[in-house]
Amino acid sequence: MSEDGERAPEDGRPLRVAVVGAGPAGIYAAETLTRRAPVPVTVDLIDRLPTPFGLVRHGIAPDHPKMRAIRDTLHRALDDPGVRFVGNVEVGTDITLEDLRSHVDAVVYTYGAALDRPLSIDGEDLTGSLAATDLVAWYCGHPDADRAKVETALTGVRRAVVVGVGNVALDVARVLARAPQELEPTDMPQHVLDVLAATPVEEVTVIGRRGPAHASFTTMELRELDGLDQATVLVDPADLELTPAAEERVAADRNATRNLAVLREWAGHRAEPGRVRLSLRFYRRPMRLLGDDRVTGVEVERTAVDDDGRATGTGEYEVLPADLVVRSVGYRGQGLPGLPVDPSTGTVPHEEGRVLREGARSPGEYVAGWIKRGPTGVVGTNKHDARETVASLLADAEAGVIAPHGERDDLVDTLRARGAEPVLLEDWRAIDAAEVALGATRGRARTTMHEREALLAAVRAASGQSGGR
Ligand code: NAP
Image: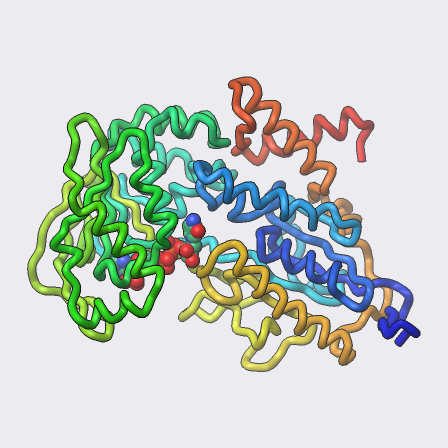
């Protein structure tokens, strides 16, 4: 310990940490490590994309500019001299986990939960059936989005059904129901605006397998459905009649109380000619998707919800006609080569953020964000989550479980020597500037560049101009 109580690094260099995933969880972890640690720490913040911000860039709906503005706050952590953004590097492909670990004293996994959850019903693979993850990746301009799949599914769509009543389902329904002029000011890629403008949506139906008392969307997001230029939100009053148990649940839960109040306001709405019908329907679970070569409808079973909140089938079926079905029933995480997840939860087993392998703590490995706790909460939830993980990491450093012993090769030098093309902070700034410039060509504040090659071309153009890096 030094006189001021700070523990000096034992061999004169800072503790080196790699954070894998530059979304909010990774950025908060990096920020907490560099700002709060009682010892000097440097962080390599690695992402497989050439761009930072994870779901803030490729998940939060582009028509939510205020929420997306959180990237300005997150950027402060990237600007910290103790943090080095290392984008365009895939752990498991460009570098093995083992190799990465040999470059640093500790690794924090914060790479999220990118996979969709299937419904596991017949017809799910038909053209016109999409996971919300497909659609969200596409409209946010994620480089790995499957454009052909999504654009084929959207062709000629008049009636869409969205399965699930979480906030992602509301995002998807809202984006589908919006008028082109509402999306124009967003940073959506131009081809996304063009395809959505050409999609003749007349009806979007969001279905919940339980009742409104159990919906997981939040009131602010729900309320927004009523403010769209060309859509009328419709609710069946019969869905709002609650059992005593559901009433009790609503009374005990502020979000559910507010949701019910909003839904009751809307129960009097009537469909209006020429406007998109945006319906919320409850007590319906999807049984199969209908259609031969593409989706024509969803067969649903009416449900009843018991006092424990479980939905059971009533044996009463109906068909909701649809040319597009989007399942929005949650995300799930997957392992990295060399890092298994618990298949039942899709998360990495841990104790207060310390990774467990075969039930035992694995020194120097930590986890935060969705891959730690599952796909729940809002962006800010990751702050508390990252703090817990970083506290465990720093306690381990204090206890000598991890320590800045020995020489380590520089990660970026190693990657470059192997032919990888890491994208650093200055490179990201070049991408940022190119997106702003692209937006300006159409009078927009920014247009997201959706092709990895275009993102890298912006980096190369800027590094060429500045004489290389
Ligand atoms: P979610 O909130 O967990 O909602 C998933 C929905 O899918 C639930 O309604 C669930 O119903 C339903 N579901 C699950 N399995 C189903 C099945 N087999 N058949 C029919 N329905 C099924 O997940 P999410 O919407 O993906 O959101 C993930 C997280 O991101 C949440 O924490 C969310 O709040 C957050 N988020 C926030 C915002 C925002 O703040 N604006 C925007 C987007 C996302 P049951 O309850 O019956 O299981």
